[in-house]
Image (tube, rainbow, N blue to C red; front, side, top):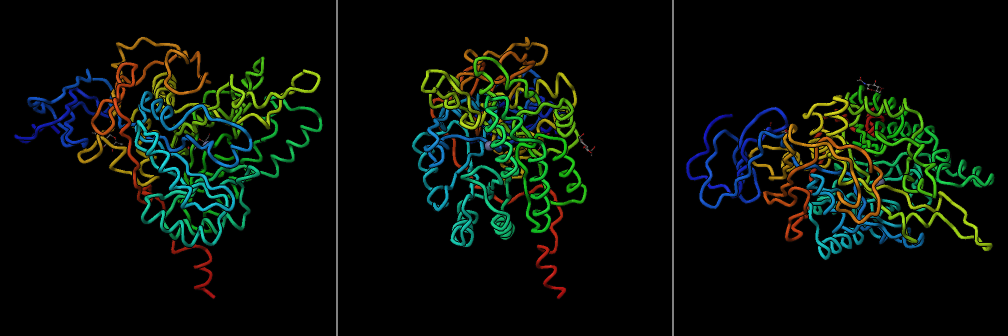
Length: 509
Ligand SMILES: *[C@@H]1O[C@H](CO)[C@@H](O)[C@H](O)[C@H]1NC(C)=O
Ligand SMILES: *[C@@H]1O[C@H](CO)[C@@H](O)[C@H](O)[C@H]1NC(C)=O
Ligand SMILES: [Zn+2]
């Protein structure tokens, strides 16, 4: 680095004194939303908007691989009567206020629906509402019929830019059988799609839930009992085994226990195509939250549940530091607490006027799209010092971009990349502050599970394709200009084998 910009290069925006990735100080020149120069002393022309980064850390815009917005349109959610706290508008407003410039949303197929039509509906919805961040869709497959696998998914993957599918091994309305799972993985491999898997053994969870209900143990804290570690570890082991047999790249979403990590690590050491995700709630919140008084435990109901064992939380931190986890996502899925169609659905009035608390009726999920980057920066980089900026960037932006086929257009500060950029505060001038939901956040929820945590830094500015969308605590984007991003295949390294085990066997018969 060091050369001056070629004469005649007129930048729309010029970032001065940027400590890029915490490793090199330079200026960043931006034209038409793209990074076109990195160097010292880049030339500002008349009309260039110059922003002084004051030698603060500058990182690529966050990419959140796991964000649920406007999914309450599904049949399942309508039956349960739940209304999400965020729409695509409020959820992406919250995202950019926390430094996230691309969100991966979900297009959810209900049983016997067409995935193609579902995706078209989500496109329409996003176009209507408008998004502050760029976005893509994972296709949730709950009914992998031959039509879906042989006709719909090939079109979506090859023409629609949708190169990932999500599969559930639990939940009554969403889970698929092992036979369906294998067929879906075969298709994923053929189309170069990544399979995201929610790995919990649904029968085990149902069995425990029934036992608890028969004993009248239905308050929020029993959520953690109903979803034992073994339910996760068993399903992770099965999923990882299937991924190896089918040679399909797989991401295990929201890993929460040590036993699952061991299975994943073993597969990774054998260079199997297995990747893992964890989320802020499994690093920072323990299951004691579920016992908070006046039904406040319901605020923390999610699946897998918050874990009890401090050893699990420590192991998750180690996995963040040592590479077991590929990406760090929010699993943002907010429901308001003081809302009859939110968390209060789990509090049922009896005929005699008393209330029964039922964790199975509490909508699952926590908000977190805005706090994801600042939490990992503050807790991981600054307080624990267990990761450096490079690893922070990997977990929050670079690896999600590679996994989901967006790199290097996204997830990098390089010439030719989209100018999606987070400018942090210079560390010495940032006064630590405790999060208060109402004052600090921009989502549609009425609480944050991270209230009271002291943040040691926060994005000062967020740029989406060269435009400042968030500055000093305010979302300043005038229009919602977020675009759908068409994606390619996974570019994270793994060994592609000769084929699926069946192909190899067949050849040897
Ligand atoms: C990373 O940490 C996890 C959790 O403690 C452990 O199981 C795993 O072996 C570690 N991996 C490496 C490569 O150190
Ligand atoms: C910043 O980090 C990203 C992701 O690791 C990388 O692609 C990019 O080249 C880095 N940029 C600079 C200038 O170091
Ligand atoms: Zn989720």
